[in-house]
Length: 132
Length: 132
Length: 132
Length: 132
Image (cartoon, rainbow over all chains, first blue to last red; front, side, top):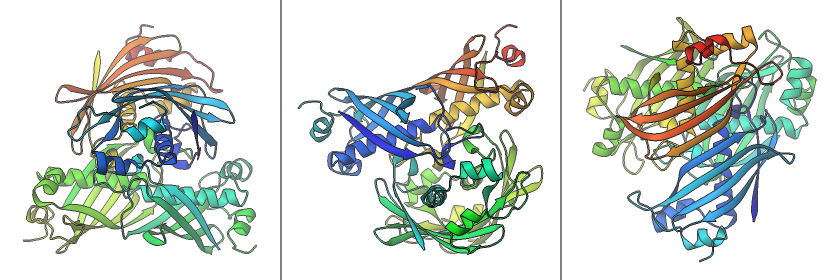
């Protein structure tokens, strides 16, 4: 299952080289993760309030293949690679007209109240296709 | 004429006080300006390439009335207050469910190739209701 | 009393127009406020933990006079204009080699636990020259 | 040779989880790269004007080990792993009191006028210990 999140490149995203600043791709893929959860009816605000859990990125890897520019219409595609007990691995690509501009691999840890590893909530597991 | 631009609050927009960081409202209203122009068929990339003009903010004033939070769905409303020869004055409010969270007044200058004041292009004038 | 905070312009601060993005001046002046408090031995983290208070910007006004560019060395000057019971008014200018690039007027409210107006703590009052 | 760049965590860097937002570590390490070049007398603005070259990140990998928080004093350490003909590989760690909070591996490409691979300028090569 692939989630698709469209977004526009604004002035805030660009830098003096005339292209999207490299750190901002991590913002784009985070937006896509939040929207993928919301599309499944899951608010992180609720996860935190009810279960005391948050997701923290433990590793991110980005390959930058081609630059995005002001006013570009982009799409972030999100694929769940693996749902572990307390971890999620996602493949998130930033694309423009079907061309991949940046490839991201993101590993998230589910953390409980004191920052300890916690089990991925069942609803997230269900939404992200990771079985029970 | 009021332009409405919807947007979501993501993690990147928030700060350790649990609310949207104050500078980010200026990002929100810039996105709305770009979308208002695009809705009228105007790309700033083209304005710059064809006319050599860019818009620069010369004054911004923001009143912060109530905070926005993670996952909030916001709407930026943009009203053109005045279109001068080389200036635009906009009223841009950031709202949530009809409540105004922040009120912004933004004055933009139209700048030509060497950063000198330039006439607001006719198509922008037409789009923003400023006569010919 | 004028507090001076030096800072460098990095790629993250610039946009595709080749200059510092307008919202980022509000980041620069916030850094200067935090450093001005730290120079007086005041950590906002402590203010929040001990007194339950945070400072929230209620109004910001920026006049952009001249652009800053990549690698520029800037200085933010901070002057306390007024210390009220629950408010602070600051004048913060962003300068380069003595030239003022942006003038900011910022009004902060001191907020207590439930977001209600709270008295500016005595140590902040003392640091910012507002009497007892 | 290790370059050390100190920096403070400000409100802009944090998010609603009370910690530094994950994308901002890429900002921190970029600041350190710019400062490492400036410490060697190299301005990227000059490199671009004189040689027509810019550095573009082609790959970034970050391992997040422990969170940074508001007002933390951090140090980015930068080590040149490899200087190739048209590439640089850097190891950049974000540390606090000697503890590594995030480990970054960054590969940069030197790009010429049309975005083609270009030879790393001799002065950068010399500064980064890559021989002539």
